[in-house]
Image (cartoon, rainbow over all chains, first blue to last red; front, side, top):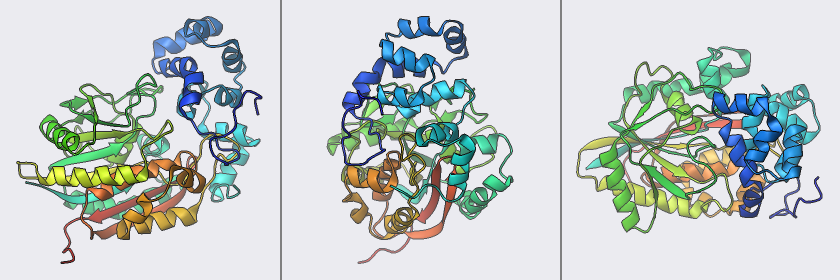
Length: 122
Length: 285
């Protein structure tokens, strides 16, 4: 867990709640993710990733998380999963892959857990 | 006057649309899900309404985080299908019904529900996947015009379950007060247990989902009493989308008849539910 991650809104361990403060922290980064809906912007992003991040005003920590594809850090730094997913889709990664990242599993292990009826703990 | 003839609750998982668009509905991974839709689709094909109202949420496609309307309504005569980052779905654009939209808007504002107005809106899988669950092969056009009603379920604080149920009840009154004769189908979309991020990602709670599917028919007020925290605890952080089913249910009569329901795990990272209710049943005196 990123040390900047504030205490959760509820006593629900492992459950990020995308609230107003989180959204304020992540606004510039989330706007950049949303821009990746067009092929033209995806090309521009891939041609100069750090320049594109700077254009959108990401903090250095957010930029590092994006360039390193540190998905957990993107969430901790204010990313909304629906927006972060745009970057994953551009990289050809699935929501199951991200589920594996967040839970310490491979994509295959996460898929197997879902096919077995989902994770029940928590 | 207009009459609600049916209500359809359905998940709107994007991969359900992708499986249909890529011809994978007979794959072992997907067959049970799509077989579960068949009885609902057959009944719906025999009960085509003049207009449909779709209660859904956008997913970073039609609206950004600059402005987050708690409730919104589309008043356009056409809604283009959004490119969500992998090209447009090969489905028709959605035809609107601005006259009904404006009637509903006025009535709902008069009742204290201050909806944000969208005169232009691209619609994403939140709206098109439920239309595909209803009509798998629309051809050049969906069965009827659609009025989109949007709900913020992405950023806390989402509207309470109680507020959604009350909006649905006001929506039912607004429909009944429409001066034109029209039959109406209502779709409440999204939901069933899922959480996409965090260490609890992949959480599924079939006991809660099953209770919800039954209680939405018989005692929706009980579900409307659940807090946000309880919904997130029981159904996962994205399972809070279930509040959109309560808008659909609130617009229907006290007594409804279940035509069909089906529950399936997993559709991608989530449980998927479908429940179809007939609104034209005799009511208690």
